[in-house]
Length: 593
Image 1 (cartoon, rainbow, N blue to C red):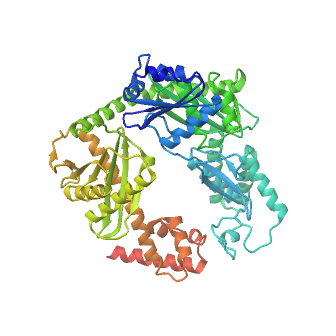
Image 2 (cartoon, rainbow, N blue to C red):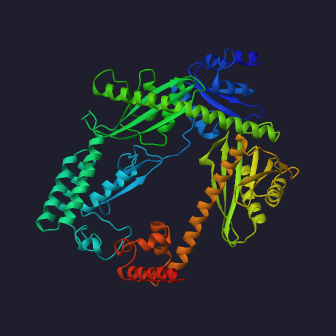
Image 3 (spheres, one colour):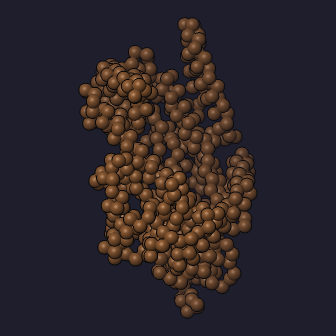
């Protein structure tokens, strides 16, 4: 059907965009030869996700590039801009923890997370550590062994850490520069791979505690030493050049690609990232695009090791790093390990993935037919929550093609605290879709509100004001707070659905998800409101300290459990004592009540 248009596509590199009948871009690809690649979708038989995508193509467009490298860059930018339904995106936005060393104004260690890390950044970061517990444990241990700055704010008086010799008193004392430089050297040396410095320091401290008959502290440090040894042994690999490198192993079969990325930092294997996704275009192209997308969100190492079939030159140029294919030696063995892990991951998970995909797609398609919708690619679901009219919030979750799109979830703090579901729903629907119209972002095919006719009417009245024609349904719970009825927003009739069907389980899953998301947000708001009111009772706690306490502890329970040492990282000692005393008396009073 595209014969004439295909004949005009040039034999040049570039990016192509497939569109559905509504003109929406559903897939973005790149090609060394646009004519050959675009034609391949229409002159051969396809299976799986590719066949489904091709069945929806109503038109296509393309952008000619001056080189393959430019085609890569255009493709990545278009994927970010349009979020096409058939492109594989890094949906989880997962950021891995790093150990960050801050030298000025005072030496300090902390665990940090960054979604975008660039080589030009001046931060001293070590990692990533997919095991966040291990990162925190190492930071905690280094803080005990070395007198780094511990407090969060700029205190003007020395605190408990100085008196127990875990801080040099940076806020008040003149610091021995030579001593500080030696401490920084030791810490950075360990984080760069010199394990002996830390283990020797631990042994020295243990001997010191034992000599002073403080066997309890010596035993505690012995446990820390054993833990660190286990962590370091697990991380060891057969490379001793301390180069930060990633190993990218891949395997594909039965229409799916498995990718395994291992992180090697300073001679240690500190963890990895794995993913499995369906093939739409050529596997080689899909993997190369995935790699480039991955490193727009994560640290680019000094070296990436990958299989020879991938275009190392282009990847190296775009990422401004080395991309190599080792042919022998320990690097080759490590790359083979990554490939083997990718293969094992796919073999172990493929059956479950296919089953889940079938059930989900079948349920989504059945719901589309029940509601007589031409397309059901996206569902927005809303729920409200309040406590007797206070702390009113709403949550929106999104399902795309039957799967949670968590990067699209949104929280709404309602402007007026009232026990009024109708006006709460009106406010959140207006804010959501007025913004969508302004920003020209994707609209849903279906809106589901948690509730019955009242919530449906609130939603429909706003959509009419905004001149939006979107199907609305309500999900009503029974007396046991379980999914019970699907209400059609067009005629307010209950839609009969078998309680043991995939569609009913699908609706229940969606309703549970929006309820979970909204309730969690409500608890957070309520907790912060509760903390704020309690902190107003304590003399010496103003707006700044109140915000810092809420940020650090997050709940009254966590604050009650905090020690004086933890409270004095934010408060002066006397204010911390008063707060602890107030919280203790409040807790005792609540027990009696």
